[in-house]
Image (cartoon, rainbow, N blue to C red; front, side):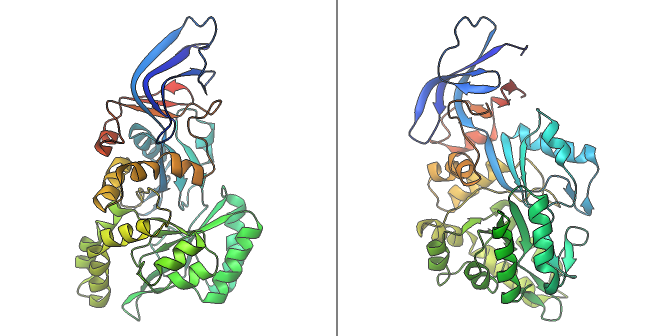
Length: 363
């Protein structure tokens, strides 16, 4: 569209799950519900409009072997954009992706800095690998570098034990989370297993990634503290393959991973039923492809979460949780238009008709 052009989105605009309007206007890159006076250069898009989708666990700038070149990171971001993901919470990346903020055509990113892991207890070249005495200092560093989030690796395989085990002593995480909160940042942690969760939640953590180890005895604690989970079910689907690869060397770990995978849907449904906030994240980056947000929403529905709630987990609810606007008057015009009503069938998310970012039709 040319400068001064106006975009008219008509059909059904899902401002909220029940707040449905017939049209919106995009003027100067922002949402308006009033027809602009005297507008002549008008482009019209028709369909069902949603706020730009959110991937709350994504890694732009990260590949299977650590940081990637700028052109690869750009391709990752464009792939997410094509899928309708216009807001990303980057849950840990060793790359500096601040240059993306200057690109009007790329998704907006909320960064958690770089992962913080225990020495030799995570994927090589992904994280800062440190010991507990340095945890507070590194959390402070990443809180200042990020956009209001810090990412810990809460558990990983302990090679001596041959199974998943917590990475940090309780006193270290209490001090680290307190420091992050003092600096105005929220804290999230990668956790596959059961054993690290109670300490992290009681220490004041804000979110748990994956949360496959969430058990019936821990669910009330999560609900009481309001700790969110981002299940990344499209990533958990890889557990059987991972378990097969480690069977010979770490049979105990392999069996554990299979159990976590087998109960994944029950875990997510139990969390949702208890009132634990659940948000959409794909864990794209590393070894997982970008652009899987629609598949993750479908997985939440398969797990038993109602379609509208699963939709909120990548749209209205996710944006509110991250402190970013949806389609309110005056908000940046970041939206996706679909052929049908995604509340009735979330599978329509897999085929955006149009993607609008900063008021520009980019797809």
